[in-house]
Image (cartoon, rainbow, N blue to C red; front, side, top):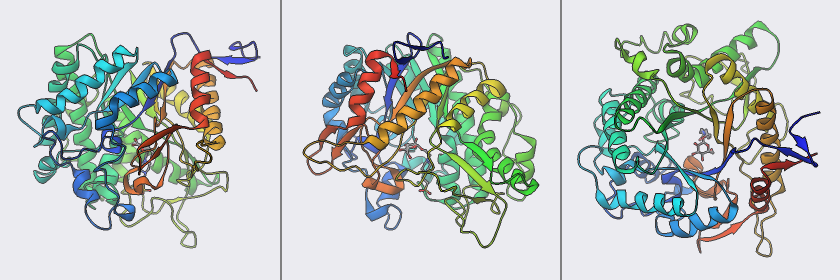
Length: 468
Ligand code: GBH
């Protein structure tokens, strides 16, 4: 049996870090307050046709005005850590230059409040809200944006590094690069495959420069990055499907894993992208910066991709739109296996999380790993003042079992952050998808902890899952 199983419970190691995660644009609202400048998500969400039903983050969960209540919610859950992101245009309204003190003060108060409640702040420097002024100057496809990002990171580090110990540079650079500049379904909505490849490089360069700049000021803090990783498998054992899986693994996972953790682009990915980019934007020394040693590594996991070689008779979903978010792999199709899905239509695949954790540990790094996001959208209903989200609860339970198995097998997984603390602005899906442990009524801003929240609080309290 599993040695972690005792007294009818499946235990986690002492000191395992239990958290919840959010992101600035998805919860804060107050888009024009206290000197905040516009970000690419303000522009994008206010452009007709970009976001479902024209939803914007203008108000969102109004967290900017309710952060004290939200910290109390977290304290009630008993979490040991809170992963949030800082809105760059609150700190630097035009993307560079002097700090906007009122914006910084918001995060200073938040951090102090978290510490007062014994909650460790986990700060993500960039979760997709680039100052619009920097986009106007070329955005991530322009090399200079990497340097601006490092300046901004350094500024945050000097202001908050005495009380925030855990720092993540970027959340999911794949999304910023390939959804923002390739398929255009995220801000800034550009559709230019070559630009998306440059954006990916400059995001990673910004990450490396930022870690170097921050570590120079505060060597004692922990630095990492968060990638969205996927388990990828071929639909069949044909050579063509195996090649499709290799390509998608290359674009979704290895395009970022290899430069950051091995200091090189994977040769096969450079080959797949030959028609798209000659990688002339990569300068000598860039990969050494990008692979600057880290103290920890963050993984966001939601689902598995099952892929197959092109078949014109099968509808291409969800990413095979024109243009594709997987440049150079337009002929690959994403296949549904008909297994249960969430409200995003993502297949529920907890073994894929175990596989991903073991792979990163075995093939890429011996660093401490953290699941910095994992969770599921379901169409919740408030009935008699409660939300009985057994589907979400089961999703968390299955994925936490996968985490536990990873730990038992020797993976140094040190913590888990549920996505998300509360329902919020789900990017191109607006407020139509709910990922929260806590339900948000967007009319009244009332917060209602769901059944999954009560269950998670109990798991945290016991540091264990109920045995099955
Ligand atoms: C994470 O992205 C994000 O970090 C977080 O902000 C987000 O709320 C959470 O997941 C849940 O989605 O259907 O073409 O519009 C995970 C990767 C990539 C998943 C973008 C959703 C939408 C593409 N995300 N994708 S599309």
